[in-house]
Image 1 (tube, rainbow, N blue to C red):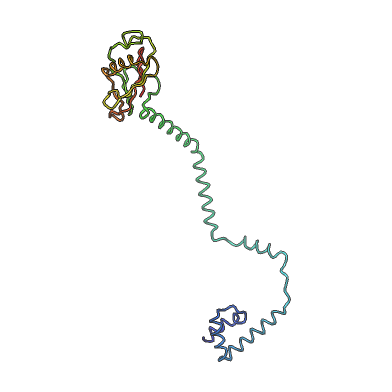
Image 2: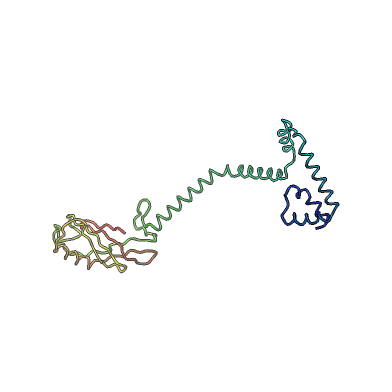
Length: 232
């Protein structure tokens, strides 16, 4: 260690504020350097005299003066903060007048989306049905095309389409429009009626349910001996 390095470490040597390795190197240097020892003695005398000096109380308004001076000192980020505040204020002035029209536009878009979805996907017409109107729904329910004119015992008439009895059944169709199962919802359920219903459904024609232009299984047709209602 040379004298220049030793001079920087002399105050820390007295206070024990340097590393152990530096403390050992400085001690070895002081053993062979008289000039550095004299400087170390001066630091000791200075430290002893400073220890006897009375503590001076700071002025009462020192904290206030420091705050005032700090507030008067220009801030390096002052220009950036001012520019950011102006940008925020200008954005608010532009967007606030557009808030109500934007909200109305969003609500209108939602309403149009619900209308189109309900009309195209759900498969249920909106509003009053128009005669001879072709549905444009992507999912079209199954329908009855022609019902075989066989009598059904127990309905009170020999013509299934002219009966006034309450015989209601639900038929389930496959993708080819053939009945794969049916369920009597109301009316007679004896074996004779079931055999006659089997014969009627066998010779009747149904259109299967269509989804995106392709026939689908699982379509259901609701049949009444007074009228025929379709439920997809």
